[in-house]
Image (cartoon, protein in one colour):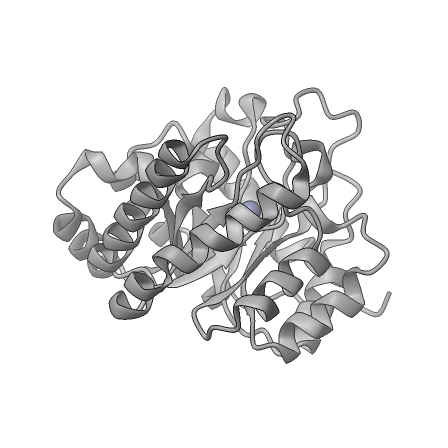
Length: 277
Ligand code: ZN
Protein backbone atom coordinates (compact mmCIF):
# COMPACT_ATOMS: atom_id res chain seq x y z
CA UNK A 1 0.00 0.00 0.00
CA UNK A 2 1.21 3.52 -0.74
CA UNK A 3 1.67 6.13 1.98
CA UNK A 4 -1.45 7.09 3.85
CA UNK A 5 -2.87 10.58 3.40
CA UNK A 6 -5.45 11.28 6.09
CA UNK A 7 -8.80 12.55 4.87
CA UNK A 8 -9.57 16.13 5.91
CA UNK A 9 -11.60 16.81 9.04
CA UNK A 10 -14.14 18.53 6.78
CA UNK A 11 -15.12 15.04 5.60
CA UNK A 12 -15.63 13.47 9.02
CA UNK A 13 -19.21 12.51 9.79
CA UNK A 14 -20.34 10.42 12.75
CA UNK A 15 -23.52 8.41 13.18
CA UNK A 16 -25.60 9.11 16.26
CA UNK A 17 -25.58 5.38 17.06
CA UNK A 18 -21.77 5.43 17.27
CA UNK A 19 -22.08 7.40 20.53
CA UNK A 20 -25.36 5.74 21.40
CA UNK A 21 -25.49 6.72 25.10
CA UNK A 22 -25.57 10.42 24.15
CA UNK A 23 -28.72 12.38 23.39
CA UNK A 24 -28.95 13.98 19.96
CA UNK A 25 -28.09 17.35 21.48
CA UNK A 26 -25.04 16.02 23.29
CA UNK A 27 -23.85 14.20 20.17
CA UNK A 28 -24.24 17.30 18.00
CA UNK A 29 -22.39 19.55 20.48
CA UNK A 30 -19.53 17.10 20.89
CA UNK A 31 -19.17 16.20 17.21
CA UNK A 32 -18.93 19.91 16.44
CA UNK A 33 -16.43 20.42 19.28
CA UNK A 34 -13.99 17.85 17.83
CA UNK A 35 -14.26 19.30 14.34
CA UNK A 36 -16.56 16.82 12.62
CA UNK A 37 -18.67 18.34 9.86
CA UNK A 38 -21.39 15.77 9.38
CA UNK A 39 -23.87 13.71 11.33
CA UNK A 40 -26.01 10.77 10.29
CA UNK A 41 -29.11 10.71 12.45
CA UNK A 42 -30.64 7.41 13.46
CA UNK A 43 -34.41 7.56 13.65
CA UNK A 44 -34.55 6.59 17.34
CA UNK A 45 -33.14 10.06 18.09
CA UNK A 46 -35.89 11.89 16.23
CA UNK A 47 -38.28 11.55 19.14
CA UNK A 48 -36.09 13.67 21.44
CA UNK A 49 -37.29 17.00 20.07
CA UNK A 50 -39.44 18.31 17.21
CA UNK A 51 -37.64 17.62 13.92
CA UNK A 52 -37.45 21.30 12.83
CA UNK A 53 -35.78 22.08 16.16
CA UNK A 54 -33.27 19.26 15.61
CA UNK A 55 -32.57 20.56 12.12
CA UNK A 56 -31.86 24.09 13.43
CA UNK A 57 -29.70 22.82 16.28
CA UNK A 58 -27.58 20.72 13.91
CA UNK A 59 -27.05 23.50 11.40
CA UNK A 60 -26.34 26.09 14.11
CA UNK A 61 -23.47 23.87 15.29
CA UNK A 62 -22.10 23.88 11.74
CA UNK A 63 -22.92 20.26 11.00
CA UNK A 64 -24.47 18.85 7.87
CA UNK A 65 -26.99 16.00 8.05
CA UNK A 66 -25.50 13.32 5.80
CA UNK A 67 -28.33 10.80 6.04
CA UNK A 68 -30.95 9.28 8.26
CA UNK A 69 -30.80 5.62 9.31
CA UNK A 70 -32.67 3.62 8.54
CA UNK A 71 -35.43 2.54 6.20
CA UNK A 72 -35.72 -0.80 4.47
CA UNK A 73 -37.03 -4.12 5.83
CA UNK A 74 -39.26 -4.53 2.78
CA UNK A 75 -39.66 -8.33 2.60
CA UNK A 76 -42.52 -10.04 4.39
CA UNK A 77 -44.41 -13.30 4.17
CA UNK A 78 -47.69 -11.57 3.34
CA UNK A 79 -48.89 -8.42 1.61
CA UNK A 80 -49.96 -6.79 4.86
CA UNK A 81 -46.46 -7.07 6.35
CA UNK A 82 -44.90 -5.75 3.16
CA UNK A 83 -47.31 -2.79 3.17
CA UNK A 84 -46.26 -1.98 6.74
CA UNK A 85 -42.67 -1.88 5.47
CA UNK A 86 -43.65 0.47 2.67
CA UNK A 87 -45.54 2.74 5.09
CA UNK A 88 -42.55 2.92 7.41
CA UNK A 89 -40.29 3.86 4.50
CA UNK A 90 -42.67 6.61 3.43
CA UNK A 91 -42.45 7.92 6.99
CA UNK A 92 -38.65 7.70 6.88
CA UNK A 93 -38.61 9.73 3.67
CA UNK A 94 -40.78 12.45 5.26
CA UNK A 95 -38.52 12.54 8.31
CA UNK A 96 -35.39 12.80 6.16
CA UNK A 97 -36.94 15.65 4.22
CA UNK A 98 -37.94 17.42 7.44
CA UNK A 99 -34.48 17.20 9.00
CA UNK A 100 -32.75 18.19 5.76
CA UNK A 101 -31.10 14.83 5.04
CA UNK A 102 -30.35 14.14 1.37
CA UNK A 103 -30.76 10.39 1.79
CA UNK A 104 -32.17 7.51 3.79
CA UNK A 105 -29.99 4.45 4.29
CA UNK A 106 -31.84 1.19 3.61
CA UNK A 107 -31.19 -2.01 5.53
CA UNK A 108 -33.22 -3.91 3.02
CA UNK A 109 -34.49 -6.88 5.05
CA UNK A 110 -34.94 -10.63 4.69
CA UNK A 111 -37.28 -13.29 6.05
CA UNK A 112 -35.79 -16.44 7.59
CA UNK A 113 -36.71 -19.41 5.40
CA UNK A 114 -37.84 -17.33 2.44
CA UNK A 115 -35.58 -17.74 -0.62
CA UNK A 116 -33.16 -14.81 -0.91
CA UNK A 117 -34.18 -14.28 -4.55
CA UNK A 118 -37.78 -13.79 -3.42
CA UNK A 119 -36.69 -11.33 -0.74
CA UNK A 120 -34.63 -9.42 -3.29
CA UNK A 121 -37.67 -9.20 -5.57
CA UNK A 122 -39.76 -7.86 -2.66
CA UNK A 123 -37.01 -5.34 -1.86
CA UNK A 124 -37.03 -4.05 -5.41
CA UNK A 125 -40.85 -3.85 -5.39
CA UNK A 126 -40.74 -1.97 -2.08
CA UNK A 127 -38.14 0.52 -3.26
CA UNK A 128 -40.10 1.13 -6.46
CA UNK A 129 -43.28 1.67 -4.41
CA UNK A 130 -41.75 4.47 -2.34
CA UNK A 131 -39.53 5.95 -5.05
CA UNK A 132 -42.01 8.54 -6.39
CA UNK A 133 -42.35 10.00 -2.87
CA UNK A 134 -38.56 10.01 -2.46
CA UNK A 135 -38.13 11.88 -5.75
CA UNK A 136 -40.80 14.42 -4.77
CA UNK A 137 -39.10 14.97 -1.42
CA UNK A 138 -35.63 15.24 -2.97
CA UNK A 139 -34.46 12.35 -0.79
CA UNK A 140 -32.23 9.62 -2.21
CA UNK A 141 -32.44 5.96 -1.17
CA UNK A 142 -29.13 4.25 -0.38
CA UNK A 143 -29.14 0.44 -0.41
CA UNK A 144 -26.64 -0.82 2.15
CA UNK A 145 -25.43 -4.34 1.34
CA UNK A 146 -24.90 -6.25 4.60
CA UNK A 147 -22.38 -8.97 5.41
CA UNK A 148 -23.74 -12.45 4.53
CA UNK A 149 -23.96 -13.35 8.23
CA UNK A 150 -27.10 -11.18 8.23
CA UNK A 151 -28.69 -12.81 5.16
CA UNK A 152 -31.24 -14.68 7.28
CA UNK A 153 -33.19 -11.79 8.73
CA UNK A 154 -31.57 -8.40 8.05
CA UNK A 155 -30.69 -8.21 4.37
CA UNK A 156 -30.91 -10.37 1.27
CA UNK A 157 -28.51 -7.94 -0.40
CA UNK A 158 -25.06 -9.07 0.69
CA UNK A 159 -22.57 -7.91 -1.91
CA UNK A 160 -21.91 -4.66 -3.69
CA UNK A 161 -22.47 -6.56 -6.96
CA UNK A 162 -26.05 -7.36 -5.90
CA UNK A 163 -26.65 -3.76 -4.83
CA UNK A 164 -25.25 -2.49 -8.13
CA UNK A 165 -27.48 -4.94 -10.02
CA UNK A 166 -30.52 -3.63 -8.19
CA UNK A 167 -29.59 0.01 -8.83
CA UNK A 168 -29.12 -0.83 -12.49
CA UNK A 169 -32.45 -2.68 -12.59
CA UNK A 170 -34.34 0.21 -10.99
CA UNK A 171 -32.48 2.78 -13.07
CA UNK A 172 -33.28 5.87 -11.02
CA UNK A 173 -31.11 8.87 -10.15
CA UNK A 174 -32.54 8.49 -6.61
CA UNK A 175 -31.44 4.93 -5.85
CA UNK A 176 -27.83 4.16 -5.03
CA UNK A 177 -25.58 2.48 -2.49
CA UNK A 178 -24.23 3.04 1.01
CA UNK A 179 -20.92 1.18 1.08
CA UNK A 180 -19.85 0.00 4.53
CA UNK A 181 -16.37 -1.49 4.90
CA UNK A 182 -17.62 -3.76 7.72
CA UNK A 183 -19.97 -5.59 5.38
CA UNK A 184 -17.91 -5.71 2.22
CA UNK A 185 -14.18 -5.83 3.04
CA UNK A 186 -13.90 -9.59 2.39
CA UNK A 187 -15.30 -9.53 -1.16
CA UNK A 188 -12.72 -10.33 -3.89
CA UNK A 189 -14.86 -8.36 -6.37
CA UNK A 190 -14.96 -5.26 -4.15
CA UNK A 191 -12.54 -3.02 -6.05
CA UNK A 192 -14.18 -3.78 -9.42
CA UNK A 193 -17.70 -3.34 -8.04
CA UNK A 194 -16.76 -0.01 -6.41
CA UNK A 195 -15.57 1.15 -9.82
CA UNK A 196 -18.83 -0.05 -11.38
CA UNK A 197 -20.87 1.68 -8.67
CA UNK A 198 -19.07 4.92 -9.45
CA UNK A 199 -19.77 4.51 -13.15
CA UNK A 200 -23.46 3.98 -12.36
CA UNK A 201 -23.42 7.27 -10.42
CA UNK A 202 -24.68 5.25 -7.47
CA UNK A 203 -21.95 5.64 -4.86
CA UNK A 204 -23.87 7.68 -2.29
CA UNK A 205 -22.26 6.95 1.06
CA UNK A 206 -19.15 5.49 2.69
CA UNK A 207 -19.28 3.99 6.21
CA UNK A 208 -16.17 3.05 8.18
CA UNK A 209 -15.33 1.02 11.30
CA UNK A 210 -13.30 -2.19 11.75
CA UNK A 211 -13.73 -5.97 12.06
CA UNK A 212 -12.48 -7.36 15.37
CA UNK A 213 -10.97 -10.79 15.89
CA UNK A 214 -12.60 -12.53 17.58
CA UNK A 215 -15.96 -10.91 17.01
CA UNK A 216 -17.86 -11.54 20.24
CA UNK A 217 -21.29 -10.38 19.07
CA UNK A 218 -22.59 -10.55 15.49
CA UNK A 219 -24.19 -7.12 15.72
CA UNK A 220 -22.72 -5.13 18.58
CA UNK A 221 -18.96 -5.75 18.52
CA UNK A 222 -17.55 -3.54 15.79
CA UNK A 223 -14.19 -1.85 16.26
CA UNK A 224 -12.64 1.55 15.72
CA UNK A 225 -10.67 1.89 12.47
CA UNK A 226 -7.21 0.42 12.95
CA UNK A 227 -8.27 -1.97 15.73
CA UNK A 228 -9.18 -4.81 13.39
CA UNK A 229 -8.33 -6.46 10.07
CA UNK A 230 -9.96 -4.17 7.49
CA UNK A 231 -7.64 -2.13 5.29
CA UNK A 232 -9.81 0.98 5.47
CA UNK A 233 -7.35 3.34 3.72
CA UNK A 234 -7.11 0.97 0.74
CA UNK A 235 -10.89 0.72 0.39
CA UNK A 236 -11.13 4.50 0.76
CA UNK A 237 -8.63 4.87 -2.08
CA UNK A 238 -10.84 2.66 -4.30
CA UNK A 239 -13.94 4.66 -3.34
CA UNK A 240 -12.20 7.93 -4.17
CA UNK A 241 -10.85 6.51 -7.45
CA UNK A 242 -14.47 5.80 -8.34
CA UNK A 243 -15.24 9.50 -7.90
CA UNK A 244 -16.60 9.65 -4.35
CA UNK A 245 -15.93 12.97 -2.64
CA UNK A 246 -18.57 12.85 0.10
CA UNK A 247 -18.41 12.51 3.86
CA UNK A 248 -16.65 9.59 5.51
CA UNK A 249 -19.11 8.31 8.10
CA UNK A 250 -17.95 6.59 11.27
CA UNK A 251 -20.59 4.02 12.20
CA UNK A 252 -19.74 1.74 15.10
CA UNK A 253 -22.04 -0.49 17.16
CA UNK A 254 -20.23 -1.74 20.24
CA UNK A 255 -21.52 -2.74 23.65
CA UNK A 256 -17.98 -2.51 24.95
CA UNK A 257 -17.33 1.01 23.64
CA UNK A 258 -20.78 2.23 24.71
CA UNK A 259 -20.02 1.07 28.25
CA UNK A 260 -16.96 3.31 28.61
CA UNK A 261 -16.31 7.07 28.80
CA UNK A 262 -17.93 8.50 25.66
CA UNK A 263 -15.77 11.65 25.42
CA UNK A 264 -12.61 9.52 25.47
CA UNK A 265 -14.12 7.18 22.90
CA UNK A 266 -14.90 10.16 20.64
CA UNK A 267 -11.27 11.31 20.92
CA UNK A 268 -10.16 7.80 19.88
CA UNK A 269 -12.47 7.97 16.86
CA UNK A 270 -10.97 11.29 15.75
CA UNK A 271 -7.44 9.93 16.16
CA UNK A 272 -8.32 6.74 14.23
CA UNK A 273 -9.93 8.84 11.50
CA UNK A 274 -6.69 10.77 11.07
CA UNK A 275 -4.34 7.79 11.27
CA UNK A 276 -6.20 4.68 10.06
CA UNK A 277 -8.79 5.88 7.56
ZN1 ZN B 1 -23.26 1.16 7.58
